[in-house]
Length: 473
Image (tube, rainbow, N blue to C red; front, side, top):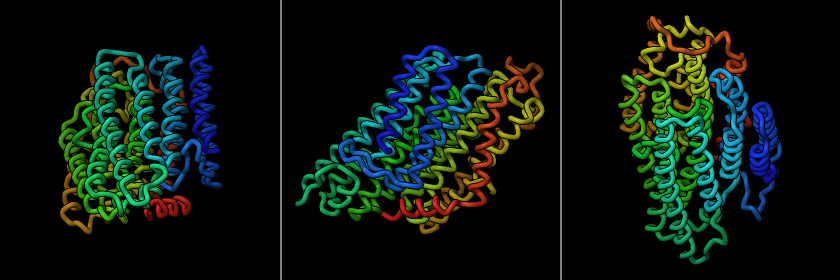
C-alpha cells in the first residue's frame, strides 16, 4: 500500500501530460488527490509494512507529515477549479502534471527513513515546484522562480553534502550501518566522530532550512509566495515546507542519540529566533497582502525550529504546529486568492472595506487571521502554547519569543484592520464580484475553519498518541 501511495501521483502525472482539455485535467487532479487521501487515511488504521527494496517505511512523524501533505493537496485541488475560473485561467497539462509530480515527491519524502532517498525526494519536489511558480509567466514570476531555483538548489546541494558527511562518519564506527537509515544511523551515532556529526548537522540544517524558509536563508520565500498563484502558495506554505522540516527533524534526533542534543538545540534556537525577528521586521507596515502571509510563514517556520530545538513539550508542540499552521496558512492563501478575484489587487491600501464588498470572504479572512496568530479557540493556540511551555526551561528564549510574536501580532493586526474595516477605495480594482464566483471557492476555506476549530477544542486521541510516539525516540 505504501508503494501505491507513492506511485499513484507519478502515474497520474504521466496521464496528465497525455490529456488535453481543461475539464478532464481538473477531474484527474481531484480524483487522484481523493484516492491518495483515502490511502493515507487507511494507514491510520493499519500501518503499512516497510518496502526494503525501495527503502520505503513509515514512522510516526512520517505519517503525520504525509497526512498533512495529503489533506492540504486534497483541499487545494478542490479549491483550484473555482479559483481558476474566477481568475480567467485554465489548468494546463504542465500545471496538473507538475502538481501531481510534486505530490508524488512529497509522498516519497514522508514515506522513507533513508537519508539518501529523502534527499532525492526533496530535490524532486524542488524541480516539480518550479513550473508551478511560473504558471502564466510574467517578468516578476520569472524572477521569483529563478530565485527559488537558485537558492533552493544551493540548499539541496548543501543537504546532499551533509548526507554524505553523515555517511562518512557512520562508516568509521566499529560496526558500520548497512544502510543510511534513521534507525541504523541512530544506532551508531554514539560511536561516530563528533566532528563529522556536527558538520553534517550544520549542512543539513542550512540546506533543508533554505528549502523550508528559515531565516536568514529565506530570501526566496516572499517573492515566490507572493507571485505564485494562490493555489501554489498554499501548497508551498502548507506542504513543501513540512517535507524540508522532516529532514531537519531526522537529523536532530540523530544528534540527540549521539548525546549532542544541546549543540543541535542551540543552532535550532538561533535559526528560530532569527526567523521570528525577520518576520517581525518585515510584517510591520507591510503593504502587500501575500507578502505579509509569506513572512507569517517564516515566523511559523521559526516556531517549528524553536520547538524542535527545545525538545520535550516544545517538540510535541512543533509537530502539532505542523498540522495547525499548515491548515491556517492554506486557508489564508485561499482567501487571498478570492480577494484577488474580487479586488483585482493584493495591495493593502486598495483592499479596504472587505467585509462590505465581500462579506463571506471577509469573514473567512478574519477567521484565518485569528487562527494564524494563535487565538483561541483555534488549534494554533494549543500548538503555540506547547512551544512556549517548552521554552520556559530557558526563560530568555521564552521572553524573546513572546516579544517578537507580539510585534508580529501588531503588524498583522494593522493589515487585517485595514483590509476588513478600512475605507473602501473610491475606484475599486477590476475584478469579478464575489457573488459571481463559484461557491466552491468558499467551501474549502470554510471546511478548514471547521477543522481548526475542532483541533482547538479537541485533540483526537489517535493524533495525541502519534505526537507522543514521534517525540519519544
